Amino acid sequence: MIGVDLTVNGERHQIDVDPRLTLLEVLRENLLLTGTKEGCGVGECGTCVVLVDGEPITSCLVLAGDADGVTIETVEGLASDGELNEVQQAFVKTGAFQCGFCTPAMVLTVTALLRNDDQPDVEDVKKALGGILCRCGAYPKILEAVVEVKGVGI
Ligand code: FES
Ligand code: FES
Figure 1 (tube, rainbow, N blue to C red):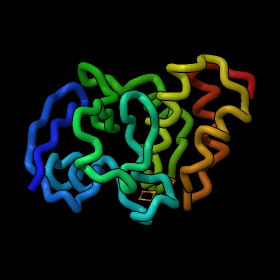
Figure 2 (figure 1 turned 120 degrees about the horizontal axis):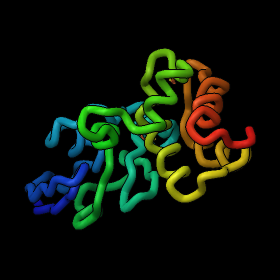
Figure 3 (figure 1 turned 45 degrees about the vertical axis):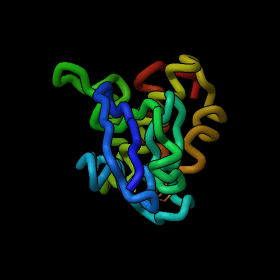
Figure 4 (figure 1 turned 180 degrees about the vertical axis):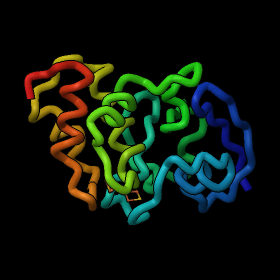
């Protein structure tokens, strides 16, 4: 076992974990934050994206030990005082999902994008979301949700 120190959604966790576990596994199984989804488990689908120090990363490709000391945001941390963040609200308003399996990764990635650039163009949005597969094909509605948030020129 190894000790890791993770700050997740503003809460510090100092826990001992099996060094073979990925960050995705620790989030879901140790911290019970099951909003982060496992699709492929090998870095190809993007459904496991969380924000690490503000940047989207595929958590299935990171060993938990290598995440020691970082700050993590998962979809569970986006709402504040029981109110969804503006990206989550836009996804709901536009119906930007079907099964919802890719939605946590999509919402986190759009949230990170808009923190850094509040007027992205369509290519910026497609590039940001390019690593996340939506098996339901909800991409047009997801782009509509981004427009809904910022009225960007998409
Ligand atoms: S589960 Fe991590 S990229 Fe597919
Ligand atoms: S809404 Fe089903 S995978 Fe995207």
